[in-house]
Amino acid sequence: MEKNERQRFLGEVHAERDRLLPLRAEATRTTIEMVRTSGTQVGEPDLVPYLNLAYLLAVKRTRSEDELLAFALSLANWAVAAVADLAKYTDRTVEQVIDVYETAIMAAADAGEEPV
Image (tube, rainbow, N blue to C red):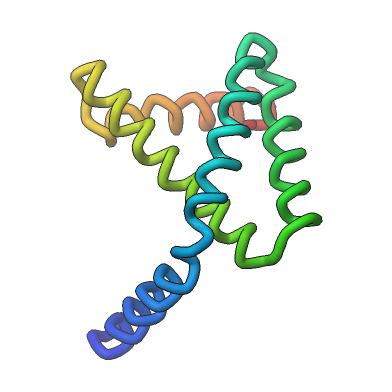
């Protein structure tokens, strides 16, 4: 990506962030609700993706596309923060934590299993 193209893209990202900022509080509340609900079901890992998808579909069907995007951004931010915290508390780097999950996904694919 050329410098001018990169600058335009970063400008677009900044403008979108500013536009979605008023939706942040509600997106965060929805994220907390989803993580709290799905997190109580980690003992049944096959159920968790369905609960998460139900939340995503509910947001998609009952709210605007911008609210769905804000929710997705909130989820992504929470995922990054959780991985960073896990790395910190297990004395590993973020890359090492990601490698553990990536290796598990690759092993599941090699075994013919569907990754979650």
